Image (tube, rainbow, N blue to C red):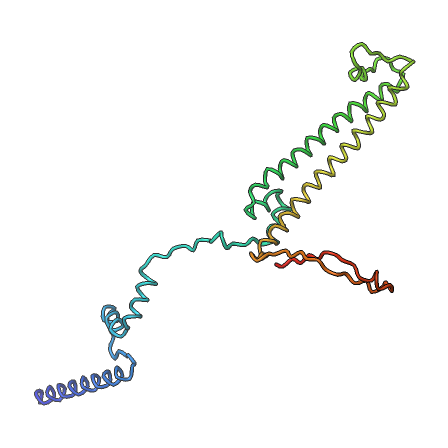
Length: 244
């Protein structure tokens, strides 16, 4: 009895193995891969690699095993953004020129700022000195004589020339006030020009200038339709035609 059961079990095992082998062969023939038993990681790698073609294997090697290089920016074809250049120039003077890679403009921008600031401080100091001198010469206090520092060597203010010096100090005071205000406006102008230059420079970087530029100058006849006299209705002239 035990031998019969063992024989029947062997027959069932052989039949089951044959059925599994037949199913796997049919699926491989149809292009499908299905494992009917738990495969180990090594078996999975071998099965997947056996189905991949040569081109797929080369793609996997290229994408996975080779090191990835960072894409470098091509500065020859790079174009700045006008909006970004505008905001950079507003926040920090000269930053728009740096963003546009126009480094030679940086000394011009900061030179203009430094020149305007120096002129503003100088004129403001002279305004304060002449304002104090004018106040001293206009009062009746003999101890306030700050105006003497503006006099030439040997000169002295008395009743004969006091009115002339009062007018002179007043005009100098007003002159340095105007120059100080002008220096402030020049400083604002330099700031505005740096912003406009950064924006326009970034905008013109995308402007395509053709190499086929030509200027054609030739004589022509100019017709004046409002003139009734036929001798005066036509006149000789020169026409200029620019192709770009």
